[in-house]
Length: 390
Image 1 (cartoon, rainbow, N blue to C red):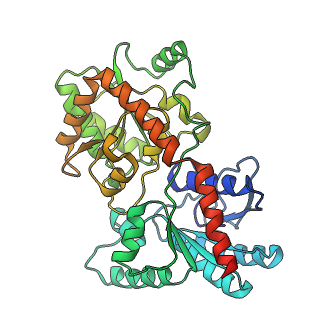
Image 2 (tube, rainbow, N blue to C red; image 1 turned 90 degrees about the horizontal axis):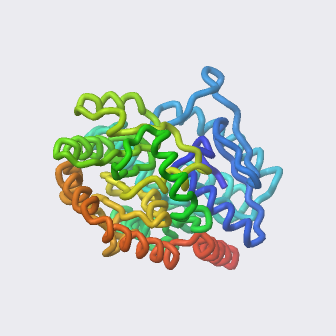
């Protein structure tokens, strides 16, 4: 596997890489992950890291020009590893992983699988790294189209992404939707006792008697964090006894300052910063309702599955990806990006605790039926086997 990111960090696509590797290993496969210099080693995984950039070894890569240097270093390490290890298949995560993987797969005469988790140029627009009418966007879009043509097979994190490949990029063959899944043995609502729940809430500074809305994920505008904070301010202005537990990174101080400008106190919104993967269940268990107000139209939203596993009712914007996960069990705010709509949807479910509890039970049942990693791992292995037969 080629992972052009600082694996392992505690969010999104990293969890997909982790759980895919574990699911394949559980079926007897050997998996080696080649990734950037920074990141956290995970027990039981074979991880190979590239060299750091000479000018700054502690740089955590996001959407920036530094990624070009990291990808050059990653390419050399991937080539060196592939020539020594001789893998039977290359699995490239994200567009850079597929591009590097194409060179290796051609050299070794093995299949290439592209793990597509959203549009490259769509993400660059979300991060304000490009403008749609710029010459830079034109050339990046051409590169993305070429990368989509390269792999022997593409797996997608949502059915919506598979439709995007078909409708926008005209890739129709050997595209397999393998939606993000969730480890139900790791995430479950009774992972802490009621007494521990009260003690943990108090330790975080959450006033007694308040309901708690939880958010877990990257802190970024395209994730809907500004709208979430605006909704929090609206609910507090209406006198609602609610606190928001916001778990994630980066830009914690930026969003804390923004919350203060909205009149929210540190008891109204509690920012935990980066949340270790191992600590996610106990912190999600502190919530009564979960929010995933992601605005991006192309990326998956794996946090929703974590909420479902924890039997939390989930408030989202009405997007195709959210519908795919939640079906008719989601609490949908519309239009997308409207903070008032988000606030009113949250308010309605906070005023119906019995209905929220019943909805949470049904959401966990849906996660168990449709989104288990063992099931996804078997599907992924079948994709591999088809490629080997071809």
